[in-house]
Length: 397
Image (cartoon, rainbow, N blue to C red; front, side, top):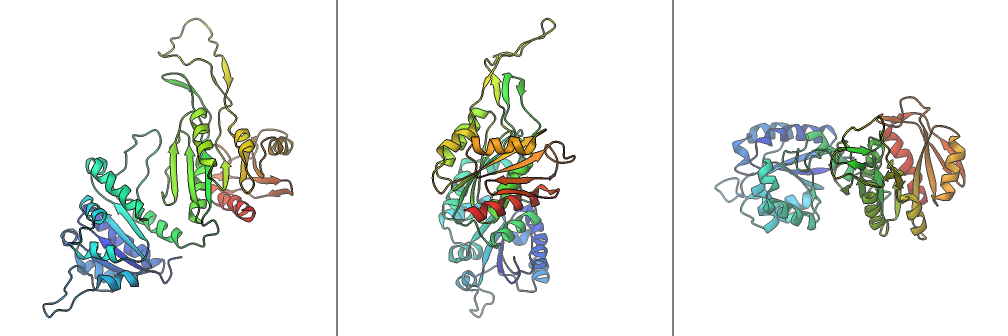
């Protein structure tokens, strides 16, 4: 979807500046026209000659190109572009953009830009984690800018992997997705994904094998098609490919997922309940690690909240609710019961009897069951399965 698009690529003084060449190549490969604007510090890391050879355009760096008064118009660049991408973007440039310090060509071009702006930060972790940097990024988000950051898994440190610039191909994927047709534009979709863990003691839990891959694929497909997504994710190690239009809320237990889902569903147009939620939890969670004593141990379990049933009761006219059913026997009969009991608009059925699908797999094979009948699909990658499911959702919204 980048064919014919005009992209202003801003490059700042980061060691990651060399990756801008890969970004340019990927943009041009997808049919975009690229104009580079580089800061003086950026030229210390990569030469304008290299960049110009790739774009077939002179690189813009200074306000005046010659001593005869010829100058570069940041206003014209702002009108010319379909999008501006600043990658890499240093902490210093983030601060200037957030506060309007227009002391170089890149920031003045940003302030004149009429098109959407995408920012890929690049700095060391300490600089990234500093409150000033975080505040500047939030300020830029509030202005409508899109921040592209690499994502770390749930079980890692919350900042692990942050600060470094996202990989060039993934950065271009974000721009590509932005220009896709938007059949869900203006819609807010809640998606739950992954397992829940119910603590037994500080080191043990009750859980399941859900990887979260299907839920994350659904979130990315909805976002790609223009929706604002609230992704409530259990403890997973899935790498989120893009944060564009996706608000991720990390949870661990069923109760935490329930609280986040109920709050988000109140303002959502639809919810897709893809998470594998534990039906029961230990009645008592031990404060210390339970030692092995005797030949057996009994754990008394109590029911967890039924998130699907609660959202089904909350559902208002105009809202859609989509469920998942993973069955091992009597698949369609059990799915039909769940469809009615939970007040779903349709249910996505899959079976553990389909080898190479479901938990931990990159593939899935589903049927979509609703009051109007059943649609069966072939086994395919979960990214493509997500597209099939969202096609069904889009038709009903």
